[in-house]
Length: 466
Image 1: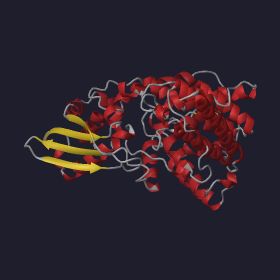
Image 2: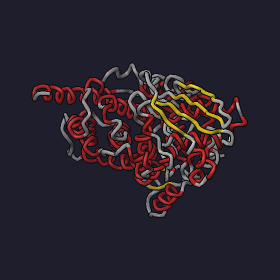
Image 3: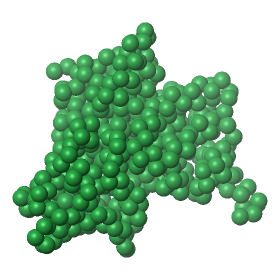
């Protein structure tokens, strides 16, 4: 590509970033459709439940204890039992570490990114610390989601080398905080130009290999997103075409700048994501669902005694998740062999499938060694790009096959609202027993009166009241 073409792309990035910033700062709460607000509430409940579910994992518990033992103002809630409070930033860091730990947060698969997990720890903490209304908080949740997905759609080729938690974390968090603080267009754009220079080239190989630092990238994004906003307020920021320099020149992803502002206000990406039923990388879900269907039909196969081998056919991307011997819980979540083995032993929905106890389960380990993987040909485009065919070969030579083109919970097969609420209750009931009811009540209040007079602090406090 010659210099003229490069200059044109850089100019287009700057122009479209300006349009995105204009839209984000002029969007009024009243302009957000009720369907979008309802989905924002459901995603918040889902992600808070996911955060709570990880609070007793040893590493998370250790870090939470460190933060809560510090002397600090009680501004925002750490999502764990009894909802202790700490400073804005300590709460954002604590919840940022936990939110993706158990792989149960929501996501967006058209171009892989988790804008909710990357923005909401900071949004919720800041909304509490500044005693802001539910309306102000929800507006920021929606804006951060729309900005994050459009950055990911503008530079999709960061995958599969780099993980979206690293390359979009600061952008999502900064967009959420800047929206919450009602930055004007210039300040919002300056924040994004600074934020994109602070993202990290987190390798996608890290979660596959089990490097737990990957779980810290949302927390790092919260801190740096807040810092990027502070820098912009101090008149310290990047260049208008900065995202081009980072994502195309630095990360090697061709720019699609028109996607930065495509269909804003008409295609609400927050309504096109997915909710997870299983605590694993989403690429394992179709395999787990197909296998569970076989096990339900042939219950004698549970435990694996009669199983000789299990052949899993998945997409080219899915073939990356072939670690037969994961050494950490994160590696287990990104291991299709582990996901399959845990399904055989415990069933697909078992909450313990990817927690610490699963790592020492000898029956899961023995079944992992029965799993073979093969690339599937002729995989359809998104939203059918994560299929799986499962073939179980029995010790008597019989074979049983099942195909799942798109897992339940994905964009093409969204979960019913009541199913997501059941998941929220299952994950949160031991930590915040009223979370499900609080999510339902807020949805009903917004349906009747979008301007319900409620503070974010009051809503969060209600989670922990039985």
